Image (cartoon, rainbow over all chains, first blue to last red; front, top):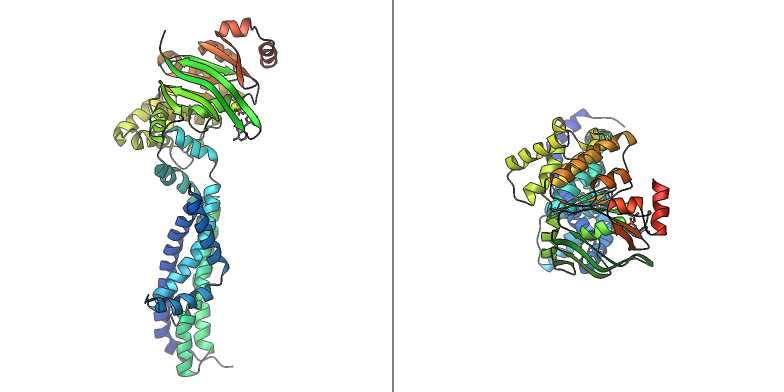
Length: 215
Length: 246
Ligand SMILES: Nc1ncnc2c1ncn2[C@@H]1O[C@H](COP(=O)(O)OP(=O)(O)O)[C@@H](O)[C@H]1O
Ligand SMILES: [Mg+2]
């Protein structure tokens, strides 16, 4: 086994392209999962069970089926229904949707942990329902769950290579293309692996320090 | 004699099998200071929570200012709620907001005051409760007694007609109780706010009350002036209860 620095250098242009795509998927997927997760969490608490029940059913279904299956489903079945998205869009939607079912549970735990007395004080002050959510409940819930959300972002980062399965040109897919062209496997894969460590490890330190500061 | 402001008509409240209030009737006139006494679990907190619309009665009618609080539509309930303030045993301040913002949030959002106006009034109230210099602090940086005084200022900032006080000193260290009670005496003396007060501080109750209601078994078993109830109670249960707490 010999290590070829020239192969590393050759891979770099693809690497930067792939990194950009991976980070794009991560950022957009996170935003989607945070937003949709909050919508689910509010749905869990809806006054009507005709809202609660479907929200439970959908989120449980998405949460308990594999992300890769969902990716393939959206990628191959949506076009048959006349919905055409790029691989990248499909991948981002799938990963965001999948992770929203995890963040929904995190939000729910955070919201449930806000003491009943906070709701009661808000009622006693006549704060309207949406004000109570926005200025009393959610700020307290979010503070508590910020580290847990951060951990899901890191988990999502590590799931982005699944998007190679539908040919999204993220890091892993770029390394596969490189290897297919040059028959060099070790260098591109190693570079990709190291890149994940270099992003994920500092991120996990950040989450940990967040945990310490907020608790 | 002032007009009647609050009236409980045959109010029944159950939690599962437990009938907490049983066909309860009583009324409070505007500007009155009424103290509710009775053994733990006799339903005193539940009465305040019904008035604050934190609970719903299973039967009977609660009237505020003549209008029905329950059954009523949500719009009317909101109107009534604005006129009633409540101070809780455990303060329930908003921990992520400064002291001043705790006080100004509702006046701005609910009464539609401008920020300047609300903050000016908030500072006046903080001055009144003796915490003028703490406006920037977070609740966690204050002692229990200080937190409760902020909670009182927060309730007053909504300019309530009625103030509900639920054992507001029972979560405090003994040395902090007097300060809060003095503040409430001051409020009772200088405002025309109707006060309904649950307390085990009998000296305080004697000082501020126009009327004392003794609860037991989900009903008012005896009521009268503090002199009458504390010196010459008629009911055996009242004597027993006062014997235990005095
Ligand atoms: N949310 C609730 N669920 C079930 N039981 C309750 C609830 N709130 C109060 N109770 C019961 O109602 C009774 C009266 O409670 P409460 O009004 O708090 O009494 P007090 O304030 O006089 O001590 C108690 O037996 C209590 O256990
Ligand atoms: Mg009580």
